Amino acid sequence: MARSLICRPFGPFHGGAVNRLIRFFGKMSSGRWLVSAQNPVHLDEYSEPQPDLMLLKPAPDNYTSRHPRQDDVFLLIEVADTTLVYESWRKTAHVCSRWDLRGWDPESPRQEY
Image (cartoon, rainbow, N blue to C red; front, side, top):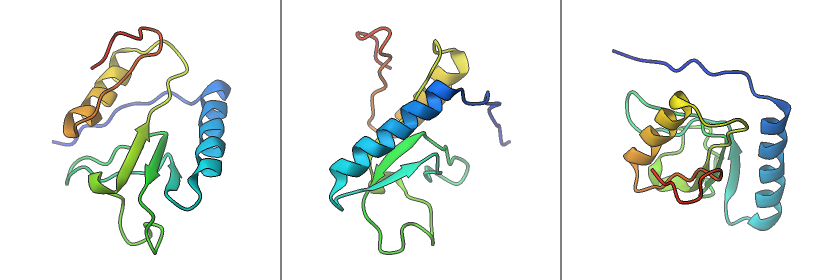
């Protein structure tokens, strides 16, 4: 059975943080990666989360024929502008568990999941 998460609207801090990341990684790219914001990444038949930002391997068609997959992702970032709540942790932990990734909560630098 398919499940969905109910997401709260983004606040201005969240949008500004994502825009800063887009600008920073865009300037640093020099064509080495594609900056993708709030677009899906294909994990499996039932899971296509939309992280706030991904750095992707360049693709000739800019991923217009398919969503990027795990092997296409150099870096995936999820921005949280409030104290992380259960659903945010659950969403991020789900993505991290699919890959060999680690999450980091800047409010608690020693806490990884």
